[in-house]
Image (cartoon, rainbow, N blue to C red; front, side):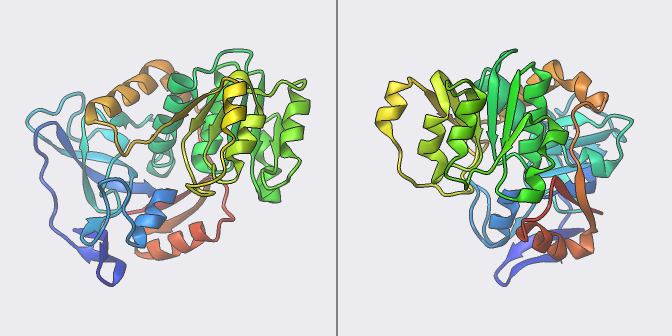
Length: 322
């Protein structure tokens, strides 16, 4: 089968053996895949948790059809339209644990379905389960113009947040954040952005920050969070090391939590997918929660898809189809 593989000379489409499902695995005939920032690093040979390196089939999320079931797989049958996340997505066939997938709603095509698994699982967990957002609270999403960022704003709005603030350093994308739930759009590269947040919250700061940037904004986030507020660190695109004001952190008594899927067990991931299905699936089926598709590429043009992502001018998801 065709697959996008990282090899000694870099990433390229190669012929590899079709996998066979075991245990609770499901074999998926992939029809579309969503690109994610972690894919760009793995495409250059960097590890992502335990994944990466020579011989790795790249890709993290997909939509397609059940082709075969492992002996212990439950909840789906051959022919079902599904979407999910996991390794080795950029291929004609991939394997998925039966607890790490969703049934694709009948009103979505495969391209639309492929945009959702990572964003739904990541941001329901960050905003609701870990972040504990409550109706009437204020929320800031750092890095809001990414696919997961747009989903975070929508989930916060769905859960009744009274004020949703989104950040983007790109003026064009910043201008579109209100389409996806933002009441206020800020530029986190502007030295005055904390003042904007404080003004919008009557000087108190926000109840919750979902941080996909970190780096230099780490201490600024502390100043923009209210006393006994919460910060959930989801991503570190702005840098993994920076100055951190421990005194401000203590003075504001902020709960600061880091999250990642890289160190979660399959049992933990299954629980996250279950919570999405239990809590917000109706909003997915009604299309209240959805993501814009910036551009669709054929699988043979997957290198062009990555070049488009690395240009960093897109809003929403980039999709490749098989």
